[in-house]
Image 1: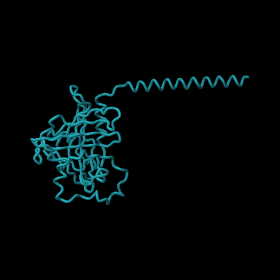
Image 2: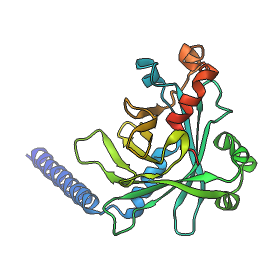
Image 3: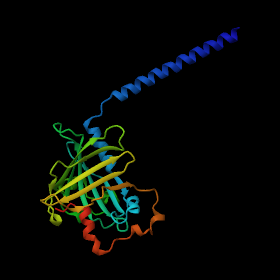
Image 4: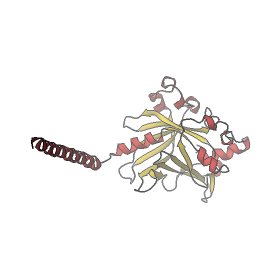
Length: 263
């Protein structure tokens, strides 16, 4: 009899302990879910998502006539006194990562309160691009230091306003330049537009286009955005893929028009 009573008592105590833990866990989960995400939380998440090494190899494999295997590399470069993150960004052909054809600074911060968006991503030119080639690949003590980076931020080029994606979409954040885009004079354009999506699988989709006074597209991809996926753990097996060789010189101008927002 005594043994059975002890067992029942132990079972009741164990059950009570489990219920207590479940109640505590539930309360903590509710508290976490109710905690509002701050404006800076959004900005920091976008900055972190942009950082890293990404490639358009898969897209180039599917559609080699319209897309190339491009390496996109982004990393933190400085932080402003207001908390804005400054990232260094470059793009290069896979086979020549040491020769980027596009170099920019990104500035990431919360959207102004009067705008209906979450994150403001602005693109700036660099005063001396040669000084920053392969910035992310270099040891920290061999890079321009944060105070130098801030001094080397040149003219403003574009701004994209990002919003959180609705539940059920593949993206986490997406946005574009304001209506009318930004001035751009490359290859007969008078203005340019940019679209950006940060996907749930850590991909980055970008679409830059230039238009003339009549609204005709004069540079940039027409089929859709470039899709950059995180770098694989090893790309050795892909080293000799035809997609990884530089295009002939005659194609370089067309490619630049697809990527470079010329000042």
